[in-house]
Length: 173
Length: 347
Image 1: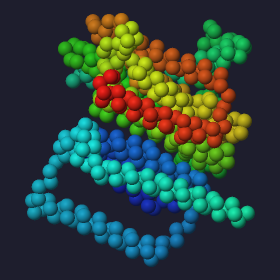
Image 2 (image 1 turned 180 degrees about the vertical axis):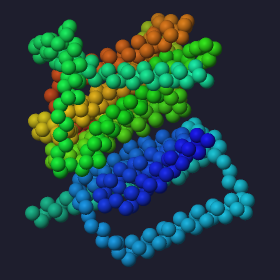
Image 3 (image 1 turned 45 degrees about the vertical axis):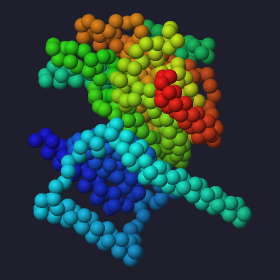
Image 4 (image 1 turned 180 degrees about the horizontal axis):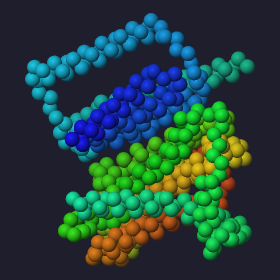
């Protein structure tokens, strides 16, 4: 009973804040709403019996990535009340495609439940710290290292791009 | 059930009481300590040794006029000081202050939240502290505040890496993310036969990295650039007055206490001290464990004060260079060496 109450509270919080993320005009408020969404999702992960996932979510997304979002928005000094232009055709197309994809995934899940396809529950292997760590460094070592390499490449590319802009700016003056 | 519940409330109450009292006591220590270092007297008029000065200051903060500048972003402006104390108040939940004790036939662990990924939870909650500074600077609509919070964000992200890597190295020989396992590990045996089995001896470099990063994370001198008064008036809290300003103050001292407690647990054996007998009545065991941990926290806090009044402030480029080019490689090297020694069976 308490569990349902807690679930309802955080599910509602996640939904409302997610709507604010896309609808608010001030990007700083959008980021802060995203913080609330991710924290609510972390609470839901705890309810599902995956505390490790919840902690990592807070540590990685809320504690690091969104801080960078906020940092960039502040540095660029994005306007406080940017008038919403309604978005271009590409944006509308993207929105429709995303909504269709989401509906397809949700539909597949519901249909699977309806025709009786087994959804295996979370086992220790997926939620406990040591099994997850062991799987990452043995069974999934190659994808794990590839993701690391990808991130390194992204960092180097970003540095190179920033440097180049700096240099051309210097020549002009 | 009822005993466990009562014990839980008592444990939470204990930490809240300690944390709320850290600020006034530390302000007094800081002012008297700075006076000692600079050959002055310091506050000595209100009460014995000036001890009631902080109490008077607290009352002053409560009754001062609470100004809200007209051009601020009000919701975020009010949110920022409230968030300032949250990370410090929540992270203490995973810090053990004693062994498992028996109360009326039930075994109770002397920490609030007994979670499997304790240290990760600590770091996750502590990493939310940067929102306070960023939001305060943004919502104040003041260039000095904004500059202060941009500095704070860059500084905290840079030093969090070194801090986390040094914490990881401290956990490697233990093989667990539970802080109580870490304390247990540091009780067994000794180094070279006479030194306590504390992490600080094999991981001295890791401890130094942790300490420097802790100063940066709490925005203390020599790394207090987000509020450098000679350039930024008061940095991110320029536009705050009265109790809202006091909350930033409390947040700073509470995070000092939090990181001190983490350092004491990671590197100095936590609540355990060799030679103290931790058996007998639960209340005495808890009192012993708590006093030892508190003594170690106080030692750290005194170091914070000592350093503040000894070193000049860094320049911002020097600060970032130190973080990325010195501390991060050192922390990585420390991690590799400790991991190799652990696999080799030396630690």
